[in-house]
Image (cartoon, rainbow, N blue to C red; front, side, top):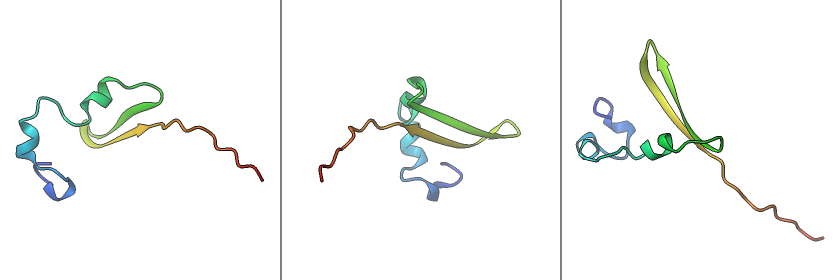
Length: 63
């Protein structure tokens, strides 16, 4: 965020004052339906992606 600000919708100075990062609760409360994965290259974090499974009621259409 600090080195590549154009890739984010917020800025480093605003985010560093927050107690927790936006996605930190998702990491702390992950389960099989909601989780965050990280990508590393030579022990350096290079990517992060979150997944959330939405539960939807099946719609039945009558013909």
